[in-house]
Amino acid sequence: MKRRVVITACSAITPIGYKPSDIIDSLLQGRSGVKPLRDDGLLTQHIHSRVFGTVDYPMDYGFTRKDTKTMGPVAFYACQVAKDVLAASGLDQEFITSGRLGVSFSSTHGSPTVQRNIYKTFFSKLPSEFSSIGAVDYLKSMVHTTTVNITRMFGITGRVIASSTACTTSSQSIGFGYEMVKYGMQDAMICGGADEYDTTTVAVFDNLLACSVAYNDRPECTPRPFDTKRDGLVVGEGAGAVLLEEYESAKRRGATILGEVIGFGCNNNGGDLILPNLDGITTTLRLALKDADIRPEDVDFVSAHATATKMGDVIEAQAIDAVYGGKPLVTGLKSYMGHTMGSCGAIEMILTLYMMEQGFIAPTLNLETVDERCSMLNHVRKITKAETQIAAIQNFAFGGVNTCLLIANGRNAGV
Amino acid sequence: MNRDELQEKIITILEDDFEFSHPGLTDNLRDDHGFDSIDAIELLAKIETMLGFQLARAEKEKAMSIRTINDILDYIEAIQAAHPS
Image 1 (spheres, rainbow over the protein chains, first blue to last red):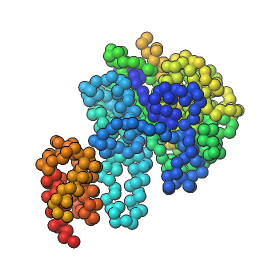
Image 2: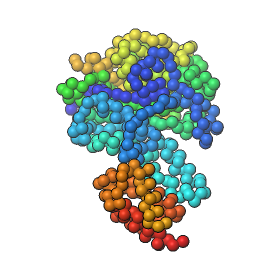
Image 3: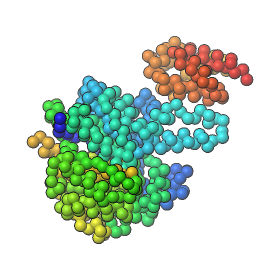
Image 4: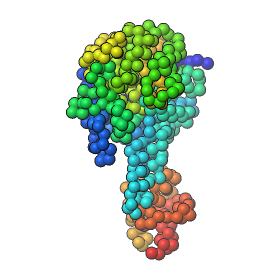
């Protein structure tokens, strides 16, 4: 059984906005969501990179205590975007609780904020701290906390997939959700990922010399994917969710079709856990094309992973060139908000859907002088009118995990 | 702490931390206020803080039969009696 899989709702909380109109406006205006790193009283003073892709606008969640007692900050993000997609989808409660809707969603760490509070108690000598490890701290911080807080909040009884693979967390979540629906295991899936504000991740990448440090006084000027003056990634926070549905049932109920997932490629480099791998990435892009049964020249737009690390961007550019050549438009969307870690694949897919719907492609921000090793690509340098039919969303993670999702414009899904 | 003082403290905790609305002493905690096993464990942590000492495992397990606010008060009084210091 192979079924078509369409996207019928999406929502993202990003450093450049939450409402679709705000996000689109940020893309059109070239507005960055990278801000100074907040002092956490613990790690910040030891970190060289002082920038972060920050969600600094107020969120009105409206959750009750019954909902929130098992939720850390990351689950607030996750449940909000899941709530949004369910509300936008128009799916009825009977279907939501039928077992035919599943959840494929996760985060990189669970909740580092809650984990940090747990560890604090071990270093405290105060007798009053003896009971400060809350009974629900595990539920708030476990790695699948986002996934099961979503199922709990909405009474979802279908399959649960919690793929926690660092930067490919949400792209794998969407890919695995797509396969669930495509092969008839579920009729619909809420897919995506989230990660909360966390200086631990910054410290890790900082120690690996992978973080941007040269623009601490000008946060909006970094990251700089493919630019000669790029100096590393910027960690960020956010969440993204898409609702995937089997095409025939979505059409039958009159759902709005935003796009169609037509292919998914995923593999592992089978070796080094950090270094980008040209063979591994190239193979992933080709696996996605094969899954979609389309030709490389059918792809109009590539949302590159493009973290702005020295070598990562070069290897990715070589892979794009080897598979697609110089035809498709290429943008690194992390230039607007940094690397939102477990949520980046979902957010970049959602931004791509917005741009598809609006008929434009945003440029890579801060791309002033293209690194000559990346110059063979068709980089988007300014707002470009484009009727994108097929887009590729590429993501690569520590651990050697590579993903590529291929999506088609929703306008074509009816034919 | 006498029973009246305990009652006032417990009701304050239930209203402030567990969002109980108009709690009655004989209300069924689960059916009337949605109080579940996670809440029970959280409440035990708050009772420990209030009493100023850690409860033994066996004492905590006895709390699982609590159904009403009166049961909570009976439970705490029994704990206090067992820890006279």
